[in-house]
Picture 1 (cartoon, rainbow, N blue to C red):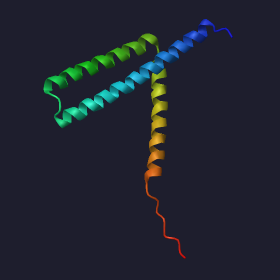
Picture 2 (tube, helix red, strand yellow):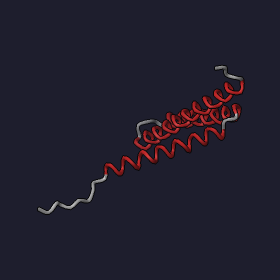
Picture 3 (cartoon, one colour):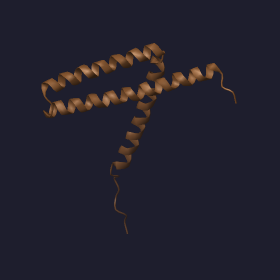
Picture 4 (spheres, one colour):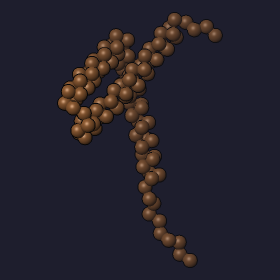
Length: 107
């Protein structure tokens, strides 16, 4: 099977969108962890400032790459799909974890 240039371009775009989506998720996790540590008083004000600047730089670079590669819509769609999958998984887990209201069987 021969792959044309159009197919490899689509694969490239899809791969870039996937990688940037994963990077966005990682940066969001980093933000949550930084906030948790800040609220716990585990990091200094200087470290908070440095983390803030670093996270801003990461978001700027992600946005630049999405625009450069033309994958803004694909990343947004992937994020939406992943959010839906996570919501479904959390709901399923929550439903299984909730105790059921059962009545004792009469004898």
